[in-house]
Image (cartoon, rainbow, N blue to C red; front, side, top):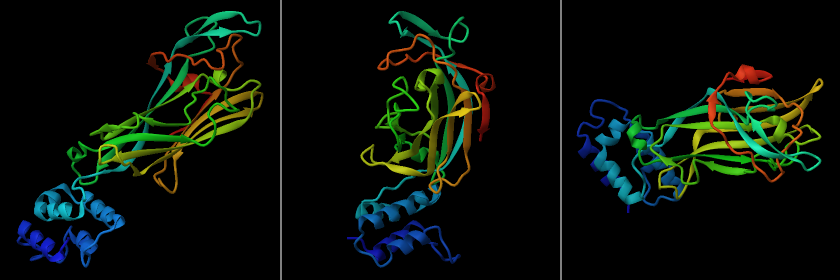
Length: 307
């Protein structure tokens, strides 16, 4: 059972000069949290663990015996978590590919999705590369070596329903780089890929939008439980609308208030264009091709914001 006096004795063993020359200490929030308690419900343990995670690494090292006592008595972890996320748009690419298409008469033709090929409707996809970086809560990146991170996206509507079709990616809910995440990362990359709008927008064209919620998450127990990285929340939107005589496809990514109050706004528009005569079957995906660097202004109808 946790004993506050034992804890304070270990604090003074770690630092014999504790509060001898100052009235305040970086341990004060932690001391206030555990004072007067002998039993710690889950919520209290979580608060203790978070206070430890945000202690400077040097202080975690200095008060090693006292924190080890907390870890043994409360079952809390001594370490760090990801914090202070920053999102940036870093690169634009296109991907080329091809598919087996069919026309209304049932005739078959292989269609190249390569803007350098005569008759091609365009590239296979537009790739909007975003990078998110985060810090270690205790100031020491090495403390994140065993912390797993991943991206979780949930779309709020059927991804293949109008204004889109079954050539659009079917995943309504997914994790990247998978449910297990990856260890030791201090950054993540989002390749927000949009297949050629002329292919994925339903025909006849229809106005509408697909909205998604994105969180970056971390796990300190090897993927058993996952927590959202504070502030690493974004809203995604794919929209189709009539603008003048043109149908326009818009991709947008913004910070998700109130979960994320750090302003971020990426938004780009593409002219949809007519559907090719030869289209993939509804159940047929268009194979992913190799990405190559490109100028977004060449392909976008309008770049609204990249920051």
